[in-house]
Image (cartoon, rainbow, N blue to C red; front, top):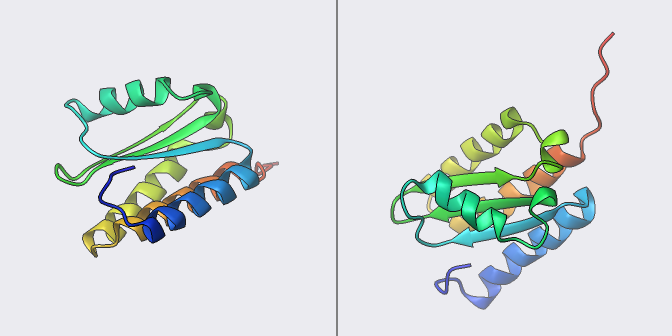
Length: 124
């Protein structure tokens, strides 16, 4: 995370990450800083360097460029689909537009874990 966060802000995000990992059994990481262009490729490269990328979710934000990337590993994509990730991204954009970077990040991690942990819907 960026050095621009206070200790209290880091604690808020860290708690959200720990709760998300406990709930979903996936690993969550947050990166706030410069994302070289193309930002999607940079976020994917960061995700690939995580300890368990197939079981991980990376939320990457470049506040200066107003870039947001959410990268999910193969195991995560079995329960966390693109539509759910898109809904979370929309929520984050609203929080960021209101000037709430920390709240947007912590809520996003929480929402991603909830979607990842949601039971599959059975259709008949």
